[in-house]
Image (cartoon, rainbow, N blue to C red; front, top):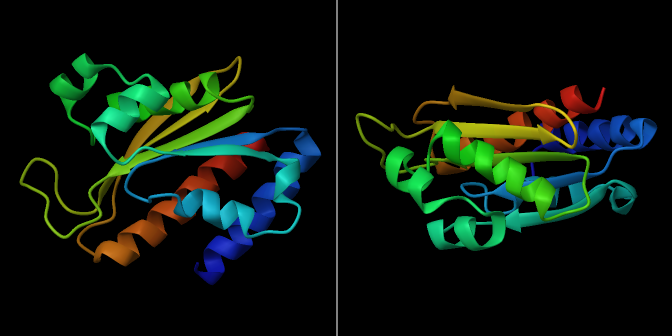
Length: 161
């Protein structure tokens, strides 16, 4: 875990604790790194409910309720799937906030879905769901995953404030 992720996770826990919010994650390309960053901080059990690591499309469907039609129409790396992942994480948990990530960490990618593209979802119980795509570029697998963790933690901090 990077120093930035350590600091962001600690900040997230402080902000979420003060707001009385709990958190869930739904991760694909990060394979649990966001959950790992959060739970690395002592006291995380006060705000972290659970994490879903849904690397395969089958896992996204079975654990988070992502629709087969959404996957077929948009592909796994899409804002539509990120939205359904975030909502599914809220439904499948007791959390107040959920962040989701699905992307192409690399190597590889295509003209239409290049390496470094990550789609994020952020859902709040009783509130709106936000989606966005970030193009981190072909930084290399580890760097894309680290940047994704940092961005997801930033999104959660913003939502918890």
